[in-house]
Length: 291
Ligand code: GLU
Image 1: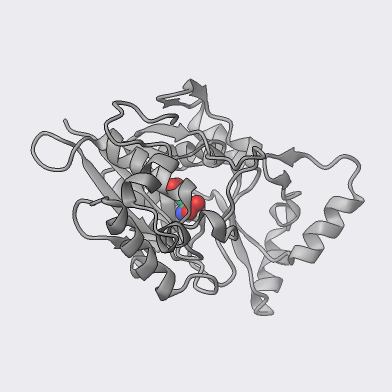
Image 2: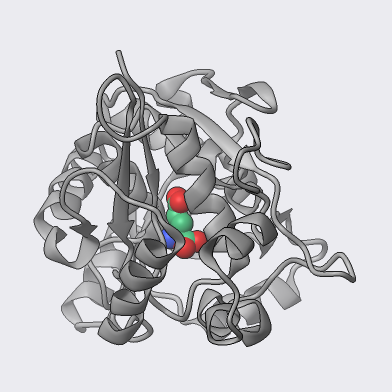
């Protein structure tokens, strides 16, 4: 069966060369559009309504088209699918694997500072589990007070239920799933009925994605996604985490860096082919320069 890949940018800024690399890698992995090739999907990850802007979404579609990229089927916009995320969350809640977390960012920081050697994950210190230890009565009191809360996954319990899991990265090989590396991740934020981890897992399932193509920066997030798939009874895709493009100093490209924005390069008079080459995909090459 033909593969389904995707590119899933967040419209919080302009696309840069790193995004172009990611999108081109996804398109290339799917194969050429049309007969015999796989499908390459475009998803707009706009759950963070405070940071996402319609003008950035419009710029994404325009820049991709200018680069010569086409995608299959309609664009999926996460903000139009809250009910899908709510349904998945309800399933996990029904399994008793989710708890409300009333902590503020400041409280979490204070708790971590007071700990002797708080455990760290790839993105910094892990949530210390404060609200996991609340008694049913303390929980009920806080809820009755109307305190805002996020919902977190009880990762230790979830791992006990799922048993050992593994997943495959096409470039890095077989991996043992280690979701505990990220601690009790947020599944729904205080102001949003989902989170990155939940939405991406639900969408990849609903869109029939068979190869999750994305940057190396999200490699560790996959441990959590694999666990969520097991808990939700989803199909298991393979992953293809490509290396990140870096600047001349070896630093990863940032969204703030307008110098590498596709828009800027285009305004400077570069052609789509020149920008594709800068993104690691010179025309005519049979394999990407790196991915
Ligand atoms: N929306 C994420 C980003 O822009 C990518 C998510 C993914 O590919 O899984 O970094």
